[in-house]
Image (tube, rainbow, N blue to C red):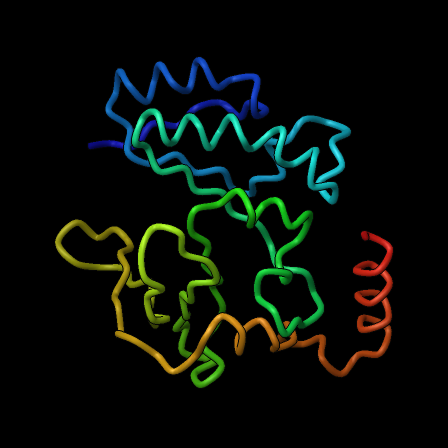
Amino acid sequence: PDGICLPAQIIPTNLEQLREIILAQDVALVVYDPLVAYMPDGLDTNRDANVRKVLSPLVRLAEETGCTILGLRHLRKSPSENPLYRGGGSGAFIATARAAFLMAADPDEPESGQRILAPTKMNLGPMPPASAFRLVVGGVDGFPHVEWAGPTHHTAASLSALPIPGRQGQARYRASDFLTDHLAA
């Protein structure tokens, strides 16, 4: 079925409207990109209690309707040994999720456009392996589609430990990232 685009509304003020649309249109997927853009103004997204208060009703909505709710968030600039802490904001973003994945450029093929999708958390079943993929334009309809390249040796931990390309040798960025991470706590 065709996608439905809703006007940007702040979570949780639109959940009843969203529930009605999900049920009436049999919506299977709702995407918040990026998730923090839909948080209430003034909400401290680094505080667990604040984030949980906003996301808990969204989790219940997904459970009640069977609709997958996908929230995207960006990575912090500095590398981390633990991929659960590489994402921006509070740890509650990961804690409330049933499954979480990290996506990064394939370090073995940096110029190819290949990406790695690696699980960081899985409460829905066994942890799947990381997989490589490319977005490809073409085919019968001419629209972009995912071309899977299969499992890879990379893991979310190995990918999250890598610096963002172009920043690793710059002391000013390392200092900025260090201060940002430590002051956020």
